[in-house]
Image: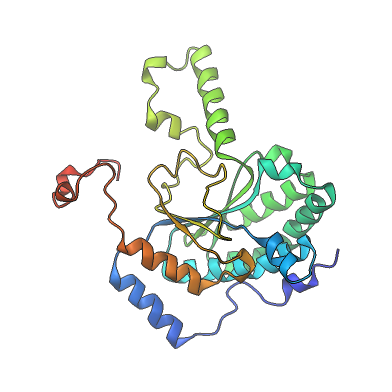
Length: 276
């Protein structure tokens, strides 16, 4: 498969755009930005079908969307961006498509790792990585190592990931601790379970975006998104750009996040949950 189309542009390619700078300034001034944005990148196949292209061409087209969203997130000062790249359920897809996706992932990482490093982006990976081909694991390890000391945006890539898998593997690890006598069962609470999730150390996503017009979260960050604000858009992922990200953030800024409280209680900061 020829992936040359995926490398016509680069991460952080944009020249300074005064209009875009003003939009970002207004977003920051309007209200607090979400610290963590998570995105279910959906619609590559349907986008390709509409244009008479193959599914893998749809995935290739989605690379530019990821570039622009990563760049915009970093420029806005968002601290964490999690992209649902490949789910555990995606292993059921045709072998040819899976192989092409793995090759595309390798090529993108190899081509763009230095750009991520130079632009202070730290790569983090969550999921059942042991299921991935060795070449993919090796490339991921190299990029994570290269960017580990970066202090800007943390780009979290969810690969071979599902929310059910995440909770299950956390429970298994906790059971091992209990069985070995290193942990008492009465000490198990929400905070302890969270420390065994693959996202430990990462704040829960305030904003969860789903593209392509589907209204579900598809087994993504099930525990972590308990109080996420969810934004659905009909835009297929290959057509999603920073302007759509800005729309999602504007919508987020209009919402009242009550966490089970009343609007009146929110006026008293002491009423807010201590973990928020």
